[in-house]
Length: 312
Image (cartoon, rainbow, N blue to C red; front, side, top):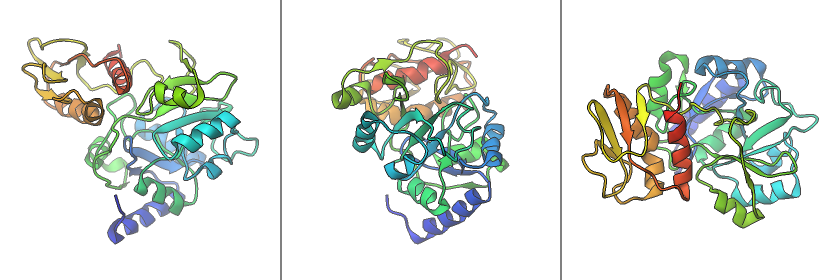
């Protein structure tokens, strides 16, 4: 998308708010983020307070380039190869903090590592550039709840708590970024996403998957996450009394909504959070969800669904 004069004015005003320590909702290719100056303890604290997010859960720091990212994280040769191949894009890298890193320790949850990403969205990149500082930005929703893929989702979520939400339309990807830990001797996939394990391994060779109950060193590792207010039941063929049914593929019968009638995983990922929000708003006792293939992007979709259905 291109940025017209009216949007550019809104971005400039939002950048000033970032510089003044305020929160701004903004679009990325993945989901909408709740952004603040990553170098300010006070601004970062507002993110945690507004979301109700636990302080031990670190934030992703959004920057405009690899060159900027190298001011904050230590890049090995492998890390640079990955960054050059996948950035800008929906991939977050966990790296050791540089010695002189100015990022708030609150944003990295006191860890010696930092989560960095270069988003692939013109509004996000223009906002970071105009603010002239890195932006800490988790998804713009209450902690643990469904991630937002439209500006109105953010507005409805926070009402008067966030003054500015930049409207970039629907997010193209619809799932949070893949998170890859390359801070140690092994490369570990911590959160699956649009960039799949296969995509990464085709570039650098075999990588490891995170183990269950691993220490929280990156966003998206909490057992319960991305959850609607009602219960979620997975891998079912049809709904029970009081449930609404979220189908997938042409064989899903009597669906309330269908993630993708044609069985397209890209379409399903893009629709997932918005359809969960819509069904949750209808007051059902539960949402029943059809099976999603466990391959490619389906792995990331199932990751979000398992966390949405986990005990809270």
